[in-house]
Image (cartoon, rainbow, N blue to C red):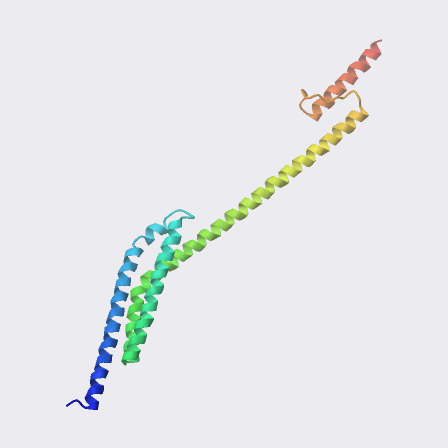
Length: 196
């Protein structure tokens, strides 16, 4: 005959079995995730050696970080299941430390990838800043050249007004050439006047 106590014992044993099955199933998922992490982490060293601005780095970081977050979520889930099943705190702490040691290499890989992404970002910002400074410098040089050309044109016009002999012709190269030609012409005229 089944007593109330034996029925409670059977129910408790059934709950314990279900809890143990949940723990085992979640631990199997965790082990599978560790295998995936190990597989994906194989290419981390090559990825870190890739050139600046490579999309490979961002993809590898995102992939490993996502899987690592999943691993930590599973560790927390298993901790909760173990607490519910009545395991001691010491046993759970020991188990947790062991699992964290298992994911530590992948945590290090994610940190290295993150550092590389930050380094690449600082290079990108520095390059953008330099490009902007170069562009501003080119604009300043161009404006300075325009101002200088305008100033030279004013001087030429003023000189042309003061000295009508000096006519700037396109075949003459510079303002200085024009002045030399004009002064030579004036000297020749003065010489010819003296001779007469």
